[in-house]
Length: 263
Image 1 (cartoon, rainbow, N blue to C red):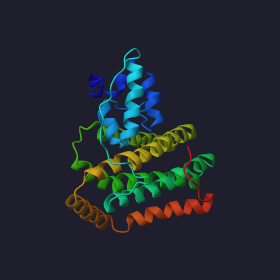
Image 2: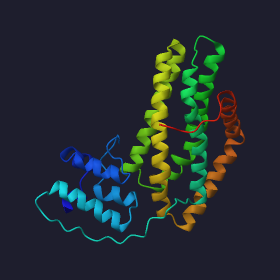
Image 3: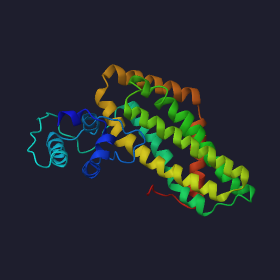
Image 4: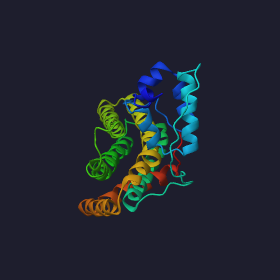
């Protein structure tokens, strides 16, 4: 079993497809990942399962890999997983920004349902939505996440690479929306906005529930203080621009009604 602990998860799933279903039972959704070279042992550590859950998970996987053998799973001592996720102050700031971004994601289906690129007002809604993405989500939020937070870790780690891949994919969808506006192609706009929304919801869930808690567990008090100060400096540099971007979301919620993120 030791050789599979140190094997890339995509290779394991390709060899034993049933493993993906087992991981899904524990909220470890590796199947859709665009990178997939994380080692099995690292994936389980990052998701912070309890000692009992980890032992059961590995036992199930061992039964799939070695159906005719009784494999002993080494005992791992871990702290019990907290019932609710708590964040350090700087990470909580990113989570709160995610809530604003998710408000935009929740409005996208309504925006698409009322899409009208033939009118200036219709185009303006999409343009402002893209402006929110580029200036609030990409420039402001990622100024903290990509340019500061991720730098505290080895960016060759697969989980960090997966986040960067999601960011790049999202930027490609945004670029296609802008092309769709220029071409007055409502199908291109709606398809890419929908794809962006789907990616965004899953991406934020991975960050809020997996990446950020894992990162927080590694931080010393000193690092938390450094991050807090650096994030505050970003807020100072952007001044009241993020607040102005949030006003666009408020305007849409007034127009279409407040929504909740749903898949």
